[in-house]
Each structure stands twice: as structure tokens, then as C-alpha cells.
Image (cartoon, rainbow, N blue to C red; front, top):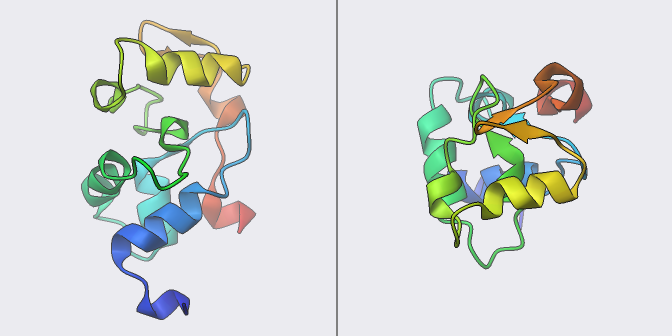
Length: 109
């Protein structure tokens, strides 16, 4: 399927699948990369609906590095556990050294 025929959610998933192991990005960074800078919330909705699509949704956080989507993961701390299993330090729902682990699709892709 050509990128221009994909839905917005599918385009979000294609970007999210490219986030490297041990790195995170933000809803807004994905939205900006897709040319929809004001659609960070829609990226969040896409992440919420990504279950079963082999999308590393745990690697997408808000612009401050907060795990704002964690309530959409099964279990109480699954999002944090997945991030920590990749070597990302999380304290009080906040990614530590956020600038260091941040991956910007606009620069990388």
C-alpha cells in the first residue's frame, strides 16, 4: 500500500514502528513528522487503538516525557515495565534523561 493511501492512524503506526529500542518519541513529534502538527491528540488516539498491530506504543509519551498513556496498557505498570526493560529510567511516571533518549522522526527519517 502506498503511504498516501494509508489512513492517518496507519501512518502513525508506520512511524511508531521505527522508534528504536531504548528510545522514545512524543505524540507531537509524530504529528509534526506527518505534517499535522496540531494533531498530537489524534496520535494519542492512534496509540490507544494500536493493540494487536505490533506497534511499540509504550515508546510514545507526551512532550515532557510523562507516561500519559499508561492507563491504556494492561496491568498497573506495564508501560513503565516495558520502557525499563529497554533500559529507560522512569521515576514518578516521568522518563529520566528524556532529552538523551528522545528520538525525533523529523530528524531520523
